[in-house]
Structures are given as C-alpha cells and as structure tokens.
Length: 198
Image 1 (tube, one colour):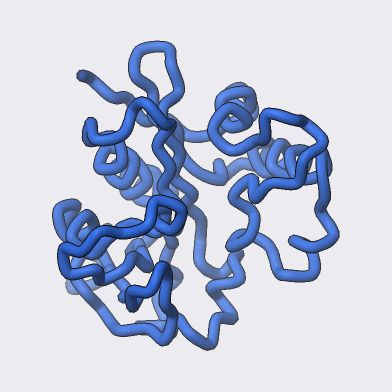
Image 2 (image 1 turned 180 degrees about the vertical axis):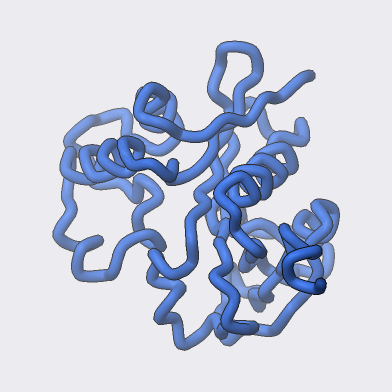
C-alpha cells in the first residue's frame, strides 16, 4: 500500500471534514480544536461554527495539518503547527525544553477500517516533512510512554513513545501530563541540525 501525505489546504477541506467533522453537521465535535485554541474559544465554538473555524485555518498560508491518502481516499489526519500558536505555548504541564521556536504534532487519527496499516507512521513522517518545509528548527510530540501496554483507542490520538522513536524522535523531557492513565513525554526531532549545531 502506498500512502501519500499532503498539506490540509483549502482545496482539501472536504477531506479534512471527512476526517474531523461529525456525521450530523450541527453536532459539536472536537474538529481537532481542543488543543489548537484556548479553552474559552473552544467552549464558544459550537456546532457548524467549529467546522467554519477549521475551514479558515485551511485558508491560511500554513496548513493546520496533513492528510494521508490511499489512492483517492483520505485515510488519516495529523495536526501540526508552531507551538507558539497553540495552548501548548502556555501549558503548565508540558514544559519547554529550550527557547527554539519548535513546531508541535499532537493529534494523529486514522479512519476506522484503515488502522494497522502503517498510516499513523506515514502521517507522523508527513508532519515532520511539512514542519521542515516551513523552516521549523525542530518538532515535538507529546505521546504516552505506555511501555508496550495497550492504549485506549479514544486516547490513542496522542501517539506512543515507540511510534515517535521509530520516526527518529528522542525523548527530551518528562511532563506532568497524563493521557489514558499513562505519563506523557516530550519527544523531539531536530529538523535543521546544521543550523542548530554549526
């Protein structure tokens, strides 16, 4: 199976909606906004307003994430953005490692029926490449350190330490955050090592 990963641009908004939107258009679902906007904005955005907010994100110069395709079918999503734009910038539980203007990848979703085919790995690699294309000096993820134990599917969107390690990330720090009963760690990948270490 050949998976292609592309930025979530305005032209691909329908595919973003397939991955993130509700079956009922007036329902209030996450739309991958709970870690993208502050809690007040998150509470205020209800029903179709959530999808419209994401549509505007897709209209911006920097895409809000990447999409995975199996042929013409969209099969996955990963959220990626500069940490400075996200609530993570003010997090008391997930510390800064240093003062680099890092990017974050924090939500990886694969459509039911397509799981177990390596799509999450392709998405993570696609997020890394997109951050690199935006000249990010490094990229972070905040997965669970589950030590091989099963992660509840509803909490699996944060990824696992092993998955990030397979993509070349290394552990940079512990956090005070927990997901699905497991501690979360900061995994970091330098994207421009020659610029960081002349």
